[in-house]
Image 1 (cartoon, rainbow, N blue to C red):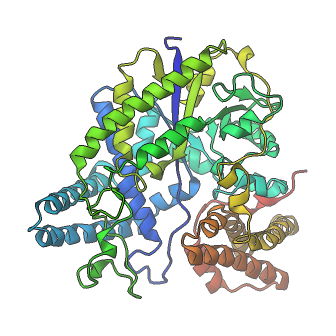
Image 2: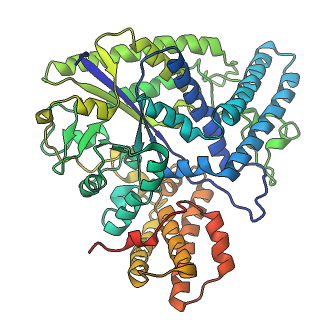
Length: 529
């Protein structure tokens, strides 16, 4: 190999299911859908811009990206695409007002003009350059070998909590396969939602031909036997799936960098600060304030109103990038003294950390690849690329320990007093779904539609986003409503099939509301013979 050390970046692109439904498909002010619109504007488009600049300047880069099926569905939804453009147009109109309002303050006025121009440019890129097809834009880099797409399960379920039910685990793995093949070919890597690992997943990863997956550092370090190379080299499970672990120190260092006081404070938006009459276009019908995208303040502490300085933030990124690279090299160099193989440092994080949370994140990623090109000893690689370059006999057989990247490193995030009520209802519904699939193996027409919708409701109820949001007290009312409504809808279908009557109108409305996985086949919940 032409390098001594390897670094791998893998990002997860995922959002909870936030599609709102109105029978008349009215395009109104975004509520929870605003998360998706911010995600497109502040995370996905800036990342694509950075990758295109690297490509144009012939800078070497490799990046892993796990795109969840839920996000794929929402990005391809025509109604959500229309709503996104309405949202962006409101931002543009508001920007004109902001430029006028801040005309007496040169610093804020310059920021307002920058944001306005940026939003206009991204609208043009979204509609003309990418033709509203962001998935295709990412696939462009996949086809060129610069981006590696990882698959994931259907609805971002915390897989250890459904692994006791083989039919549900099978449905989570099987259902999104066709969408991945349509959008990205056949991914080799599998992203575990929340890095939730249990040994029960081994056989399913093998059955669906996934080459590798990623666990948190302690999941590998506590494996049996103890990995001789720690977290700096992949291992192989007894079933033959390769497992890489994320670099704990790398993740901790990145979090510290993101909180630099010169960077933009993404939590302070003028939508929450200006008088209601000024931000009226960003108020819900109930008067609830929403984000406008215009944020003027830095992360400076002690309550200071220190205006954000983009140039100062950009200059600071260069220093942080150099320090990050040198620290990574130092760790890899130290690790190499105790191993024969080439060590690898794998950094994994949610994609919106480099956008919605950390405004300068995409700039950091771009600068990282540019700066790394000057270092001869290191090379950025995709996980599968690194695995295929190693000698197969070098991989130690290890069974990773149950683990996650949640609070405490295990399952506390998804099982505490805030969310434990979900599971007694969910597990009963999962058993009933298999019962339905067994009882109606060959049905068609209205009954088949009802059974397919029951499968969708179960998958949505299994999403780890709802207990996660309840644990973090983030949009708790929405999360509780989503979990309850999915379980309620399933129960209605179950009872209707038992009485041999189902309302066609009600079912049609539900199919429009929860229209994920249009080609779903409820028989995926049948027991294996």
